[in-house]
Length: 465
Image 1: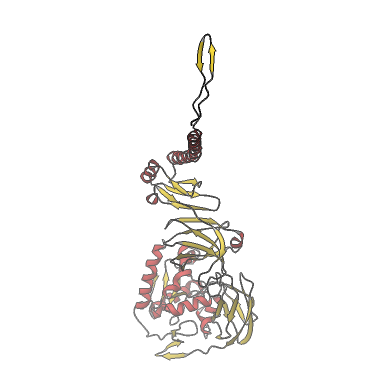
Image 2: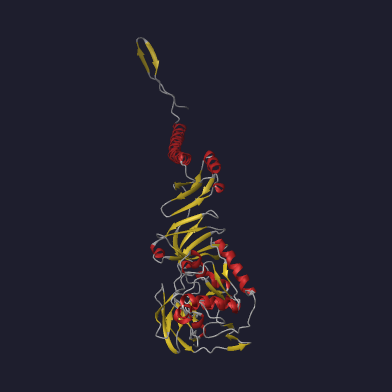
């Protein structure tokens, strides 16, 4: 038996009103309200994300179109950048380079590489590497970088205080050196990415250096055989702490043996404070002197100076073909550096040199003439292996051409035959224009030694009378 609903009747001005109400359907009403609240909440969240993003993109667009520069810097705000189509079209049309920047790095993106959606995040952090030859190496890791872009990173102190770092690329878990021994600028490093999955920037410390004892000749440029552990150490430069009295350092800070004897040289790794001693024995070099048809060869080098002369009838008649071809090669390369070279004086016969010398003696006297002109039979020009370049007087000294010749001529087989402040050794004043062909191998050895040809071969250059 169903329960009857109670009806209450009220009389108002003679009328009867039924005040009974239908029973509430509470469950349905609660779900509707929840859905409505959630919808409002979602709309608010969406708006909070969308409005700043729209504002950000509008700012990017306005910054780009108002800029007159060929590159525009955008401060990074979101990992994934979703640019407007109109922004992308404008960038490509005007060929603008975009630079995405945040506190630690910046990435340059060329116009053709701009996409609708770009993941520009760079995950930078330190950790111990696990790749072969890099176990337990603390490094700065960079991932998710576009290929073939310029990246600038501000490094943490554990790397920036080294001043030099190595950059490696990783692909398919294989490591390849990208930029080794890269110097930092203001604690930052800039490099161009390649086709790699990730990159790491590191400094590999030297744990140990091993050296071998040596025997060398007087005037040798000493190349100490050093092995570094690990072999992929970032810096492999040493300095000399104590070289003793039988060695000297040339202008390139290379070690030269000066006299016979045995000495222990102390060397130090420049960055990692590791020291080692090496025993070096210096012996006297014995020259192989050979005279053929009146020509003197010392260790295979034709020698002409105040001590050694040429026969009067020795007459090749022209510049040596190898020397001339070497000059053509040198002239061509010099032109690339905006240096113009030409031969002012090449081969000279015995009789021509005799006429020149006699004219100088009449003008300046024999003693002074001997400081700048060779007597007949004693001139290198008679060999066809020497040449005077450009300007044959003191005005050539210090010119860009003279400086270029001094720095580069050895690469083509020439040496500056009469260097500055060596007059008492060569017998002649400084002649920056006078070069002598020795061939590339010997010329480099003489150049590296920092010595004159006389010093290199242990010979004199003095007239007998």
